[in-house]
Image 1 (spheres, one colour):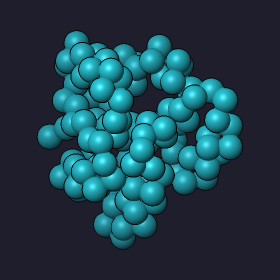
Image 2 (cartoon, one colour):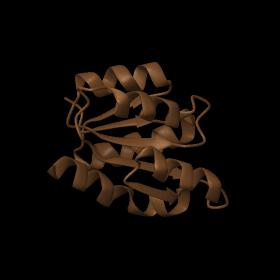
Image 3 (spheres, helix red, strand yellow):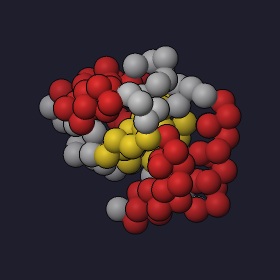
Length: 120
């Protein structure tokens, strides 16, 4: 069972996430499409979701599908994006993201985020 599911399509950032998760002892499931995210979330109901809001898959659409599913469990959703995308950040908060942060802050806090996800 994955502790964390990430929707990220940037290969460089996928590597960074995977290595940080490995070092933290966190089971990470990486996805790069909305369908894969939804499937992984169904298979891992307790997992924390990490969403790259700049992914081509438009992760807020997947989040809306997950939130609208009647059997969807409550889960922590953390999204990250470019610091200048304030409108998209507000859309993410309105869609139900628990935390929305600039990619730089997300990168700095990633070890903590992963530890918190493991401890749930």
